[in-house]
Amino acid sequence: MALPHGVASAIWRIESAKIIAVVARMVKRVDVAEEVAQEVFVDALVRWEKSGVPDRPGAWLMTAAKHRALDVLRHERRVEKKHDELLRGTETTVSPDMEAAIDDVVGDDLLRLVFVACHPVLPEEARVALTLRLLGGLTTDEIARAFLVPEPTIAQRITRAKGTLADRQVPFELPCAEDLAERLGSVLEVLYLIFNEGYLATVGDDWMRPLLCEDALRLGRILVELVPDEAEAHGLLSLMEIQASRARARVGPKGEAVLLLEQDRTMWDALLVRRGLDGLARAAAVAKDRPGPYFLQAAIAACHARAGTADDTDWARIAALYDALAQIAPSPVVELNRAVAVGMALGPEAGLRIVDALATEPSLRGYPFLPSVRADLLFRLGRSEEAKAEVLRAAALTRNERERAMFLARATSYVPA
Amino acid sequence: MRYMILVGHDEVGGKKLSAEEHGKLFAAYQKYHADLKAAGVLLSGEALKDTKKGARISANGQKRTIVDGPFSESKEIIGGYFLIESRTREEAFEWATRCPSAHLGPWSYAELREVEEIPPAGDHAARPT
Image (cartoon, rainbow over the protein chains, first blue to last red):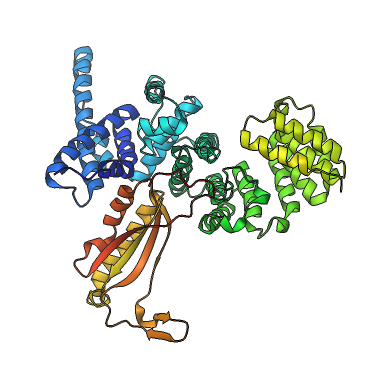
């Protein structure tokens, strides 16, 4: 009897990361571990097609994978032993940690796998692909479709990444205490990249891309269980949950983008908002030193989430949070957002001062939201002709048709009061 | 996609469990809850108390009919739920089959239901079902 459609990939998606992680700790190599997991899974499917899926398929796969991993190790030792005997003529003993390696906690292995998949020796896009493949349980084809690249490109990226890990002899270990913050930063960056790849594509017409948001959220939820004391992990998850809560509201009936302040807040997903706010509270509870960038961005998102209407927004608090963000992670885009918040909290003149200081910023030269923000502030100051010129400049800069339509609509609305 | 796993059972069957069996079942639910959380699929989940203090209400605009718990005549009651998010129905199904209530015998079961999602305003044709 054949397994019902999709059952095999469902079990793989649920179990594969744990199995790869445990085997990788035993054999010390991620590429070998993935091969072992895949071989065991293929064997299992053949067996289950005849006998049906066992009651605990995860336990079955894990046991089989550990046995195969031990075979791999024994084989390696035999080869090693022959070498040793040839070289030194001495006996090697079987390492006692080989058998003991079997029953350790899975959680630590999974965390090791997270850190290795997001290792800084790998280029960013390789980290993303490897994370989705090894931890998300996605197929190469699913990853390729989500990122709109041909499948062989992703396959090659993954193969090369695994090769790099082996060549550079990246150990299957948790980072030491002094490296932890930086290494965790790399993991969080990868998850947020995956999330944004999906989130920014919500307006597109390919349904695979928005699914990346769910994948990033799932990985973020896994991560906070693995590192419950890391405030930034909770901060990132909180940020993603709150952003995801707006997914339905940020696209209008004609597929146009709807900006945050114009969204119908009744369409925000209350469950995700609540989870996001809870996550922020957990982040605050475990924070050891001053807040990190994800925590601050989540706190800003939470200000919007808590406001029943756009008019209720606590702009003074948002401005203060952007100020803190600008100090630890300064960037022109953060500064521009701070200008918006200051413009709302203290008035358009104060906002305009910050925006005008950004006028010569080279990285914002082609950024349509610089003239767009400036236009809004100018209009509120009664300088509607200048406002109109600025928003038309924004329309000329954007490459997104829907954004252009939005800017042009604003241009016609800028009439002297 | 979101799915709800409903814990269904006949209340009498649950009452027949010994204290030790109750303890084991409670531990099984705790582990299940932890597994769902560790896999990153759990959105929320709650256990419901027995129906002693529950009520069933149905009104037709003129008359309200209220049945106070316990619902002695009913064979099936909902004892709790797990709300999960998963990429496919098969994955949700796999989680549902791991729910302790699916393994207790004929007086108990796990029910899998897909949550109705309001599509984004402009996205009526985007997702295949």
